[in-house]
Amino acid sequence: MVSLARSAWKGPYFVHFPNLQEAIRSGTPIKTMARACTIMPNMVGGRFLVHNGNGYLPVIVTEEMIGRKLGEFSHTRKKFSYRLTKNK
Image 1 (cartoon, rainbow, N blue to C red):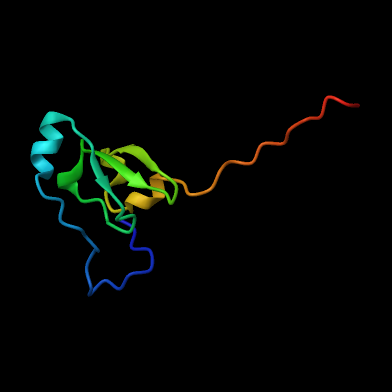
Image 2 (cartoon, rainbow, N blue to C red):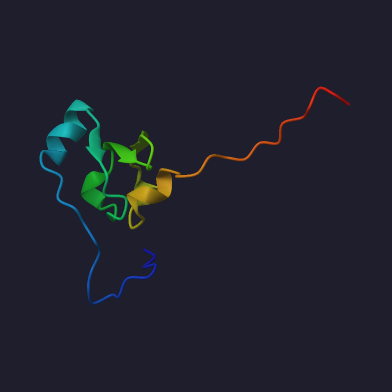
């Protein structure tokens, strides 16, 4: 587990999601703005809609995501794409 910038004595930052286990069983996504929330093992298999500043992007939590933040998987900036002009 990688601890990015948070002190070890503080522990991981976690937001309590009510009915998390029920949402995982039913497959309904949980809408959240808590991008800084650390992904815990009990969240594996859950579907989240993480706010990126403009809208909500779907994130499905897997085993490899444990210890990372929800916001790492919901990008806030558009990918740059160079547009070729037709007038050459």
